Image 1 (cartoon, rainbow, N blue to C red):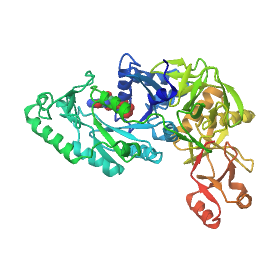
Image 2 (image 1 turned 90 degrees about the vertical axis):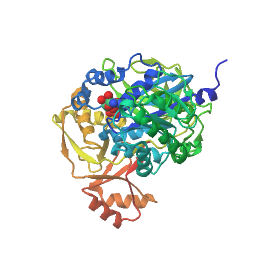
Image 3 (image 1 turned 60 degrees about the vertical axis):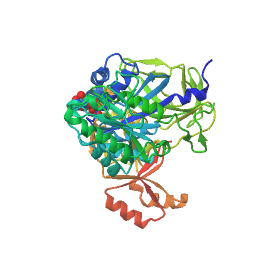
Image 4 (image 1 turned 90 degrees about the horizontal axis):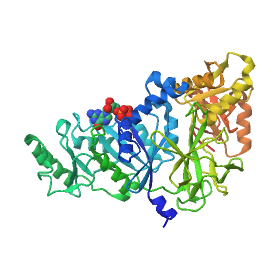
Length: 524
Ligand code: GDP
């Protein structure tokens, strides 16, 4: 008998990996896919990372700088569970892309380099997860190398992140002698990930545990396990789900140690697709009605097709190929004729996707970031954020005849979330805003390649942009009338105040106490 929707939802895990560059995210991704049978040979993800840069021209930037600009989703299965792994760009200049992706996950794996501990990007991404109450599983990677003391790593997580830790496994050895993991609560070992099942042993001193280590390391291992079992917190599901505690696993993605432990942790601990807050109501994943939101748009994934894929997270019900969905922003029907699933290096038509799944929907500009799709109900999911840009630039066009084309191209880039677009109220040329400088480079490259629009960028008169609101329309109007030269509209037509610097922003904020100046705006 076919599974019920409840059962299908219960088997799904939608997660992301957060880490500082070089901690091992790509290697771990590759191993998770390998264990899930999504790829045959480890190395394919890395190969893909490289191939992508040559696959489309604008990604030359990625190649030149040796970074991964692309966010995508990878689906794999393991023991009856379906995993949707959402990849996030490593470079901080694409932080807003990463934040948007984190709105679409139910849990995250935090990868820490065992020698380096908590690094700045890890901290930043962790804070975003905390804001959204995303439960975190910690993977202490690179245990096959010189690492910090295990307790020191746990202490650092507790101190720097104000997060309780519960080590679930303990590494057997470290560096050259690292040869497996010991499950603290179960007194069981796994030597590398080739072993599907853990073997129960009679305490850490067993031959299959301490006995695997050189003699001079055995005592320290046994003491470590005893101390961890006694002094560390036990795993507590509720505290984990509420984001107060992280279960910690040790391993080496490179050497295939601890990866299977981690997959089991995702199955056993990580939440199935959660209920989502819509503007007007709470939407349970197991509701029959289909609802989904767009968190990411990616253009030109395949240059032969010049396509544009909107990635949607299904929040409830079943999304079926061929269904007519309602795009709530416009109220129009949108046939979903070719929704797609993404595997390591392939994509397939998705006949049916369930709450928790992430599918790509090819479209020619109909869908925007933050859009909600349903099977009829007027639900609007809030919370895919827009961040006040840190860098503002005026776009200067080398060929003035192409102004209209530029306007269209910029609007499209803004809908994809590449940049934010601001149209000054006084009729002066458009201003683009970004969070990181590399986004400007991506914009320039894409305008050139895809629209044959060579552009330059000039510093704008402004350095700060804020969304403004007031308790009454009249108060808002008064402020806007008094600041005509500093007002712009964003893509949705919402008013944005721009100031040359933080000082003048503060000055205006003091003079106009009724006005709120927001640094974050939810997409809609
Ligand atoms: P990312 O930037 O976080 O995606 O990191 P990568 O997965 O690309 O890894 C960065 C470097 O660390 C690469 O040279 C990997 O081979 C290496 N690496 C990753 N995991 C391990 C590990 O468990 N042990 C060791 N020794 N090296 C690792």
